[in-house]
Image (cartoon, rainbow, N blue to C red; front, side, top):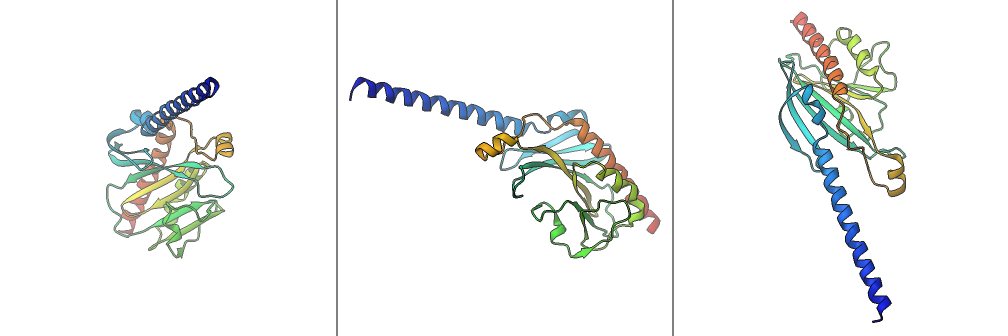
Length: 227
């Protein structure tokens, strides 16, 4: 083996080692950012516990305004010809179970790829009120709550185009909204999903929680009137 071949082998080995070290460093950085996705929300909610999903993203249980809250995210790369997105789920648990058993799922811009939505398994359609999102799927598993009592709440929530789904059940209310979108260049070039490493903004979570709290208040009022 001549000297040039030896130098070439050394160069390849050094280059491969550097690439491996860079990859490991980047991978650790990505995992840390996923674990810290809700770190900014400490000023909004009192976090009590957290878990990591299979991709390393944190799901947080917390107390807020005398209510139990869950914050989680979900990466969606199932929709063809669209950039992958990160959905944020905000679940607000109701202090008192709705004895009527009313349910409602509102899914806007449906693509039939929303694996998080029970709407595709529910078979009872609901007629929306005037002014509610038009390109949307309205379904119930049992019967919907009185819609007039939550009319303005629905309009206020979906006035934000980032909101994707609202799920009302007797035990909890869950809102799904767009948190992040994958970097376009990175995805088109490498077909790799790459989100920015910044935590989700606390102001976004706080604003949506207040809207959900108003919705729960009006649902409870409707239930009390029916009783």
